[in-house]
Length: 185
Length: 302
Image 1 (spheres, each protein chain N blue to C red):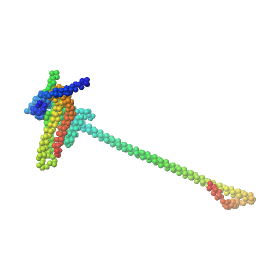
Image 2: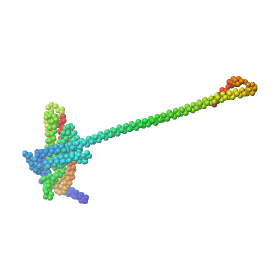
Image 3: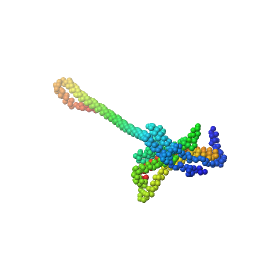
Image 4: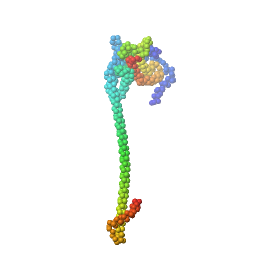
């Protein structure tokens, strides 16, 4: 039954926990040889490859960041330019509208002025015509009067007396009624 | 086919239920010594100056571990690629773990750079040794298999770390290293003074110092035995579950089959557990504690 608990027997299993100097020497040889080889041929290469990749990743990230910043800057610039362009366009349209309004007003005013001038001119022509007509009527009346007087009196006054008499008579007549009627038109 | 398989599996259980006393008749095998799986018989006897340097199974495993560690790591290191494959990714992960967590996390930058190769080699050496321990190799010289007249040693599981000498030797290296590092950083007197935690004044320092001395020696035991006992226990479990118990108890045929089926299933579970977790975990713990001891030796107070 002693084998049921094999390691209780002192001579059966104590070699498991008995250190052996020879084995330890073998281990130290193997371990330090491994350490030497790994340190010389394995670790530097692995570390370097990792560092290289690390650097590559960092550079990629930096480059990506730079590119994004550049893109954002460009975008902002374009946005600003677009805003400016829009503002300018609005301004141009507004200015054109203002100019159009001013032009229209000026045209209207000019047309109005022109019409008034024409009206004025017409009025002045009419007045002048009226004055001339009255003048003609005067002359006509004077001539007729002279002729009538000659026939009645059979006597001829000098041309000069004649005219003076008629003028005196006409000056007593009022023609203002004529021009007044015309003006009221 | 399925029905027949089921019947074959169920038959021993049925026999066991029909006649439990007969099936479970205990007839302990007095000739079976499971501990002999771990015995080291000299293969080539070498003795130099009274020290037994014979080549045996453990030495074979040590040399195999060293060879595997060097060849694997150097091979991977020589063909490092910018776009890593799976193996390279695994090695890189291990390397980063060793550099940034195990060493980098416990020492300052300069010291971590100086001690990284040592700690990393410890980790890899122990890891390869543990993993090789789960590879069945023809190392059982006690039991030979006759293949066409050639007596080939039967396949067996063994691990160099399941022998106290190996973890103890590694522990001694660590122990000496961290004391040397401490003395180099603070001088012999300063280093010994730093054992007493800050804040302890007057005569209380003497017992505290003595406790610290003991704790340093206990580290020798704890660090080595933790690794040794874990690996040995794992191998014993696999050994017993994988048939050892059946052979040892030597039950009647039905009982043996039932016991074999149960323990065989457990053996697979234990094997996966050991390979998947314990082997790596123990290597990690050993390397981490080494780093903590080294870092603690130069720290202001610990």
